[in-house]
Amino acid sequence: MKLSISVVGTGRMGSALARALLRSGYRTTVWNRTKQKAEPLATLGATVAGSVLEAVNAAEIVIVNVSDYQATAAVLHDDAVASAIRGKLVVELTSGTPHGAREAAEWFAEHGASYLDGAIMATPDFIGTDAGTILISGPRQAFDANEEMFRALGGNVQHIGEEPGRANALDSALLALMWGALFGTLHAIAVSQAEEIDLGELARQWTATAPVVDGLVADLIKRTDAGRFASDDETLSSISPHYGAFQHLLELMEARKIDRSVADGYDAIFQRAIAAGHLHDDFAALSQFLGSPDKRSLRSGVRGGSLLTG
Ligand SMILES: NC(=O)c1ccc[n+]([C@@H]2O[C@H](COP(=O)([O-])OP(=O)(O)OC[C@H]3O[C@@H](n4cnc5c(N)ncnc54)[C@H](OP(=O)(O)O)[C@@H]3O)[C@@H](O)[C@H]2O)c1
Image (cartoon, rainbow, N blue to C red; front, side, top):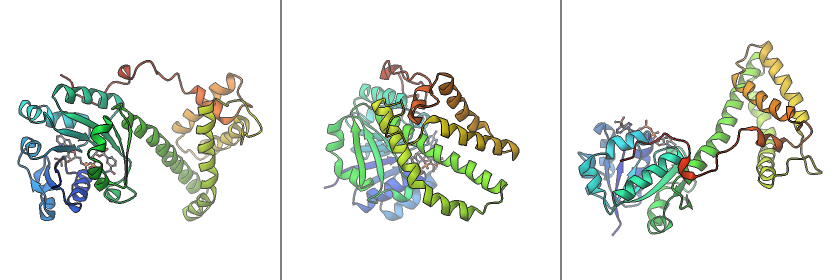
């Protein structure tokens, strides 16, 4: 017989998670602060719990998907709920910081529960499909023992490490890449509109340029990993031509009164590197000018994102 699973939080994503579990035949209980949002899941076979405590009591595995870790704390920081959670597996799929996940892992350990923290790298329509990606960190054994359930949530659910903050850390790294692309797109749209370039034309030309950019991104990561900052025979482009072309963009943005706040941030990084003598180094040399990463201790990381203490 398949395990009983409760999904706490049935917003857009939580509902998709519950639907995927129901499709795979799991006995699924759902709870949502606003009950009406959970009720459509009853027609698919879910039991709608009247309280979080009822949801926790109904299942061996509790999947949490609310807006942030503060909301998780608001839901689970209750003596009766905390004591009911003992012996269960909690899978936190709410987005958060690495530090928040580490704090939460401690809180659940203190309350006798196993804890996996996940980062969903997909929109709700991908959940339950082969392309659904979720990164999971925490005890490997808890992941392996429930791999079938994770496969129901997505074909590409991966355990990426025992350290509980790892999934959220990788999530933020990948989202940094995504927002670079999305804010870059906003700039491209603004420039195109200011210069009366049809956005369809922008889209067509981007399709042709995207593989070049993909190559640059992969090369940047590889060279930074290897510490190959000086220009060499394999350098695709040094900082110098990038900076020259970037000045054209700044000039155009200034002339067309396009918001420069993000672009000025890029400019500041270019300028720090150039002032330090790296104009003719590989573009990867810029990776040394984003501040000094604090690698002292995983437990002294960025604060915030969780109230799951005490
Ligand atoms: N949607 C996506 O594409 C996507 C992708 C990756 C990750 N995620 C992550 O998944 C999580 C949920 O996203 P979503 O898109 O499902 O958002 P959503 O539709 O806005 O749902 C938010 C959920 O959080 C609940 N909630 C908020 N504050 C609460 C509180 N104080 N106590 C109890 N419940 C509370 C809401 O309950 P009510 O219904 O009562 O308001 C609702 O169930 C977020 O952490 C998000 O970053 C989403």
